Picture 1 (cartoon, rainbow, N blue to C red):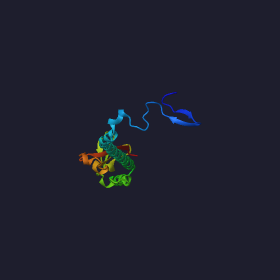
Picture 2 (picture 1 turned 180 degrees about the vertical axis):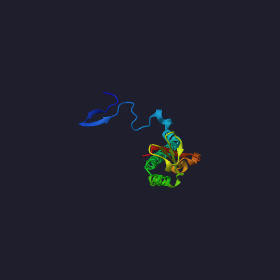
Picture 3 (picture 1 turned 90 degrees about the horizontal axis):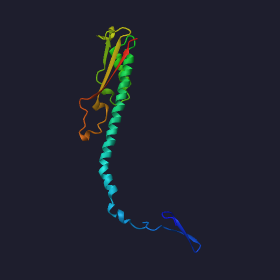
Picture 4 (picture 1 turned 60 degrees about the vertical axis):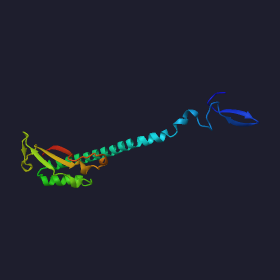
Length: 171
């Protein structure tokens, strides 16, 4: 008979299963008797680490999502500033519209709009000509842009901000 596989015997016209020798069906294996509860202990010891890693991943994902939204708003503002007859009020309104769906839309620092002439001298936006560069900078405090998932660990983002600058040519 092959050991480890089901062995069948014919006995009085019936087929029945007989386990191979040394199998521990129906009784505890003496080799593993001292390891009872180790899986639970390992889970209890590993659970805080897993929760910490998961919370860090959530914090990072929210920060990246906010960063992409702020970069998109800066691009919209730069496109608005590149149009003929643009003024900083219209650029600010375009950035606010781009960030309207986000919960941090009211926490945006004042949008900086800077125009540069051909030799990279800063000029007012109203006196910029076609072909000059215009830079739009949008900044949002990190504390407002992301949830404080890890704040119970002492992680703070005080003083930090997510900033995006886009440059476009005035038409």
